[in-house]
Image (cartoon, rainbow, N blue to C red):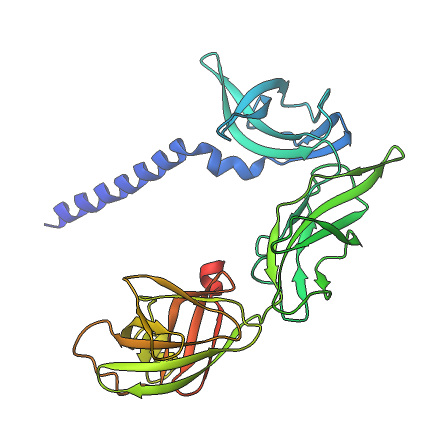
Length: 364
């Protein structure tokens, strides 16, 4: 028996060893990708200099240019093969004000073909470095009825910039206005010239001087932000309540953003907010809504409805499963809602106050 156990154990060890070898053989570039570092610098609007670190793993560098097709897919075209001892290479005759993507791979020749072992990618724009919004510019910076905070940055993919231009337009208006000019270290930027409750669109571009001429980058993507309460504030009044249903009047504070709910929004009834967060409450269905508490609109399964800032709405709540007693419990809420067009968490004390706030875990 001992001999048999020993044999099985060894078999498992060998199996694990073979799996490790297989993974390294299958994904060699992932294991070694961090060992190649390429720096790129735009020396003028038509030349881009690559700086390479010598590697003993490879014999040559292969430089390829990314070319995008009509579907947006990128294919790479060979530009140059260099010996691995070469530390720099300058790409010439590039088009002005054009985006480029380059793949640099460390290669060896195998069976007459180049095999890439290590990789890096660099991008450039043959003009002023571009401007972009922070990945979480639509959610993380503060907003209020008095101000909107913007978060952007310079992409550093082209010529050195002097600053940013910020453009703004109101929702429903197609006309952009140059709203502010800032230095390159001015972000985040706070827009204090807002009207409470209004929605605005923003875009950026950089500017700088090159050979005595002022150049501009392309515009960034549009960013939509509203001058509303960062978190929604709500109050409720219990109109009626028994074991089978709750009728509730819900009021949204002025300058709240729109709160979007669905008839099946993962709303629960619980003793407190913690019980709802732990998903230990009674699941509810929002069966119907009413503007005046008299004329009711029955909701279809998963139908969406909205509550705007300064408005009130009556809700008729029932248990998602029969046999549940709704006469007890003090708080309703859950995470199946949207506030200010962002995934949010909603809690409301029955006959009291509540709030809707960003669900950072889902956003990030």
